[in-house]
Image (cartoon, rainbow, N blue to C red; front, top):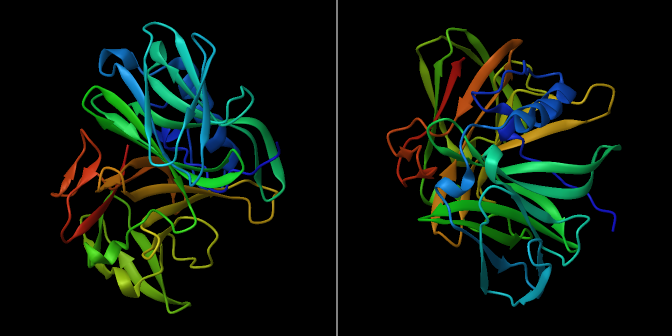
Length: 328
């Protein structure tokens, strides 16, 4: 089966503990950084905090699952959930299509992360075999979440993880209608807080047009009306090239255009920072380390606002929705 991962979330490559130098414009470094960090591990076993993994089927059709320990195949009906015990001290794989070549969730217990395998990804023609996207990663003091978009058994879907007590849950959601809730139902304002020590030139896209928005000094913040703002350029370019925050209001998520794969036309890497989880009925966020306006090791986070719980990734409803920029 040949398929495409549309916008892989690579937040695990961007964790604060990663020693790889990552910055916008070097998309391959961004991709390779995840692999380097995963190989080293993150310092905590998944099984120290979680005993089961549960797959929630909202794909719009029957799913065939297969787990690796007993090589057991199961059928999972639409709107149903199936749980598996997480073995300790070993890698454990659950296939979402009954096979073993793609659409697989793998718990890397001793290295401290859960990842998803797609059989191939194409970023505007640049293909990589067996791409792995981190869904859950130990970040030193909390379990960081990350979503992925992929074709699961032939159906385009969001893969949305979250922690529920001792269970890692994974919602497999048909992606036709986005994440399932409009952002502006719960948030009217996105507040951008610059704590990086660097001045950032801004441009804003509204009604399909870009305009200058001055400079954002370190220590300053700026508010944007979510329904009136499509994108915020953090490097003043405003051409959709990189360093852009994109608000997908109707589809229920906000993403960062973090980097480009050099030499590939429109070879952009998008990182989802904020999204709706229709099964948990909550908003969630994450952080990433990338480069902004030529400065490396910059961190964009949706987890530092007063209504954010970094330990769970949950973002409480109500203004403002805060995105902070710091420098490691």
